[in-house]
Image (cartoon, rainbow, N blue to C red):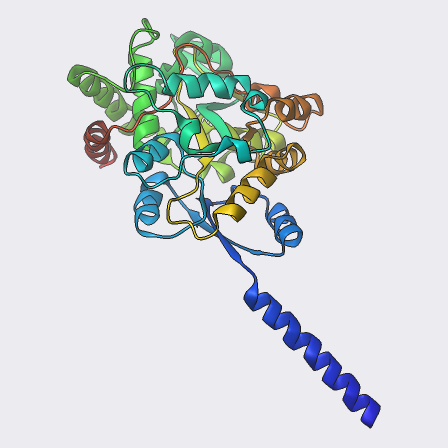
Length: 371
């Protein structure tokens, strides 16, 4: 009895010790988009550093911005224009790149091209001053290669119409070749403006359209939304385009990461970015000024920028790595199709800038368009 009692007491002490240790562990609060991180890697980070990571997610940058303004997180991962807005409000520390193990020269050359576009001109924004890139990508058209499109009294393949019409291919919908557009103000106005600027893409910008440009873009978007063969969707695309020979749409506006994921499971899909240009997005890791665990935040940033971890995280999530050698390895290993995974930043591609006035105008018009 005494021996059994001693064993019970010992086990009780172990349980109590584990509970106390668990309660005393530092907790790192990470705020990022939904389904945007490998939870296995999070567990590996917790084990390596003996900490707890509290992963908190958001649905959009627009919802995340006020939460970052009023909350307390150690690492946040918004998109470029949201980072610019929050940095302008003095909410982020400047990044100490001497503490970052991965050097800027190791980052993707196309990513750095996009970063440089943001930093152009007198009012340029240096994204790398306030953040460390996490994933990047662009907006394009996911299409079913088996679909035919009615075009000028003829039938053409979905790709042929894309090559002829660019973004305007979205106008060629029919009951047998439906189209989906994305419920996102910025992305849809970018598409409408790039369609409008198709004849002169390099000298006109989605960041400073004229009133006439906005009016013309709105008219084109209204034409799409009023078409019974065009649906406005968001994450439904992940179900609607997943199964070969059962896709719901001929064309679907998609983020490159979603396209990568869907193409991996549906051999009939491919991805196209019109020559008139697109929006390149950069999601990056930032350290808020009120972060409670800044040293640990840098450890987290380095952990997820590590080449092996970038490979694993990118392979699982489907979004393009920000490290050049990792991109090359994933393409070489045929993890994903190069047509969607390898983000090429062309001269007429752009990165959205923070512009509150323009955002409000487009938001108001987009509500009317959907209505």
